Image (cartoon, rainbow, N blue to C red; front, side, top):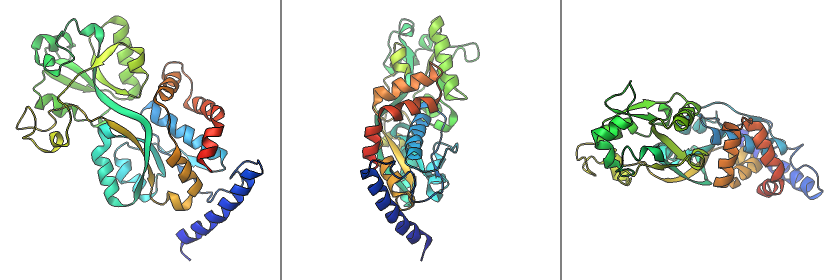
Length: 325
């Protein structure tokens, strides 16, 4: 008998025991996970994804599973760790930045798209409203082409160019290419980490200092700070693949970033090896406002992701138990 068949048969028996235990009011699956091998939930380099990982992991631990949290690279995990089973689940792949990587992952046939997380994704250049007086044509992107507007966003390291604070380089997003293709007099400076990027925003905002940077939603920042996203030419697939599309007939990426969903992914073997855990991961969704508020507890109030996750798990027991039924 193959290893996969053995796990399938063991899993069915475990599910029967779990169902009986649940009906008797006991802790479902606490004594009978389908496999004791660790379910590996990926951690990336921003707050919300790691919070979602800890919530899912905490639920699975309540159900008797062993859980580990390896740190992984955002995009390459789709075509390496999740394809070979080194990772079991990853909770956030954004249409805004991971579209091509998701297509490549789907083409392998070794991963499973578990469905949307719930919130809609938006990632774009963002500026505080106090900067609008210095660049009055905003939010239209063409205002940024004015040298005076660029100088308003300049720092000593970039002058006379404006300074745009991009996300960590692993997020991609094509901002370096966008600056060139749209002829913007800006220099892209990539933040080392998500936390550093938003610490810089907070510092600048308190002083009303010049700043324009990558801000995304869901996140607490658009609720805490008054500002606007730049309105670039609307994204289409051709903008990223056909130079003849758009305002620059010789270049790609002469548009804004795509908007869309945030997706969960699993290793293709998860459903067979851990069927109840797979069911929970597939059913898992979170409300945008709830996720923003919880992320703020971590980044603004100093709570640990584990403590915030534990709060959610305790307050939503009826919800996640239904996911496991």
